[in-house]
Length: 246
Image 1 (cartoon, rainbow, N blue to C red):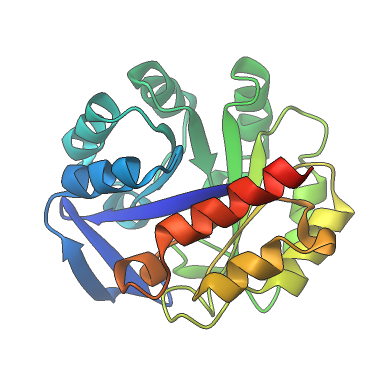
Image 2: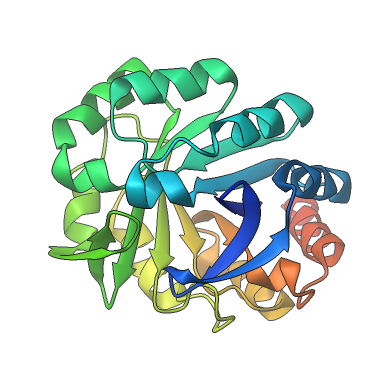
């Protein structure tokens, strides 16, 4: 089980959105690199970064900030937000990002996803962001009539590292993870699933440690960390103790 602290970047600042709404953001750190270093010092091995401006408007305003995080930390990094062509995928992987997250193109350009997975084995993750079981794209602004499981099944057995499943209706409001829906997805496909959206307390981590939830690759932690609703060291120790018991 991997715990991924999240850094969402908007206008070169570390923010958290409420329900994915760009106009409902809270600034938590004006220096995302400093925030990344804090997470590293706490003992996290991975970092989840989303470039919000790139996701919504294809803006390149945050590139230097993200590169600084890559160069000044030792954590493995998965990066998403506005990555919609092979050139950009290759740029970030060459820059030191460990896994590139594809969202909108998983709906609009399936051939690109397949080619990327072939060219960059185990370095491509897919973000499936959903409301009530149906995928939304373009920074969560555009709903579709595509069910999460239907799309996920199309990408099995091509070398995808993981699927990051976010329940948009829970994201950023500390409502608790939608474990049941994510587990249903994970049970229906061969790709490892990372659950995201709404993690609120250590109880969510405890639930993830239950036998039926060991199917998950990991979970993303956002507002609960920033609002100090969860002790990161307690969460990390819980995961480590589970590993020792195996």
